[in-house]
Amino acid sequence: MTLNADANMTGDLFEVDKRLGLKPVVDFNTYLRAAFADGACACSRCLENKGDESGYAFAHTFDFQGQVTHRRFATTTASDVLMVLKKAWLSYTKAELDVSGNLDLDAIKAFVEPQLHKRLVPLFVASGLVVEVDGQLVLQAQAAA
Image (cartoon, rainbow, N blue to C red; front, side, top):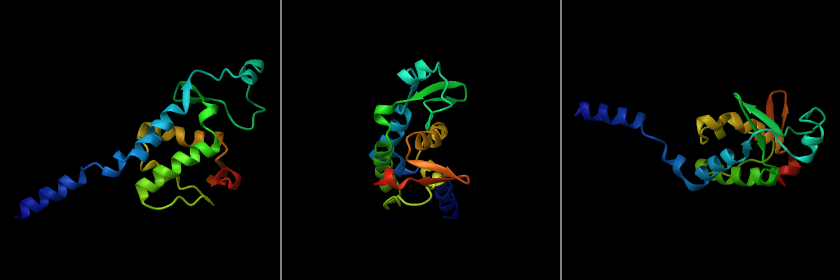
């Protein structure tokens, strides 16, 4: 009998979190994957400035471990990002996302595929959803409105 109880405990340790399969969570991971397209940004400003983004408020082109990508502006506004994030957060945590103050990146990483973690901060910052203050991601009031 003890053997069966131990076997059940071991099995539970390796069981995948079923919340990761919920549609809003899957949708957020899909959104995060599609938020960036291959290659450097080719918008008129980037072409005119020959890729020099030094004067930009938000980055257009990103290098994810040797893979150059650019943000898809039309689908990654702060309000778009917040909308899919709130749905995934609610689905995964069963609580509303607090849209004021610091953003809990570790809690978000819990429902994001590990290979997509590197895209979170660039997307959140570049979309204007958050600003980085003293190493913390702080939600922007106007973006959350």
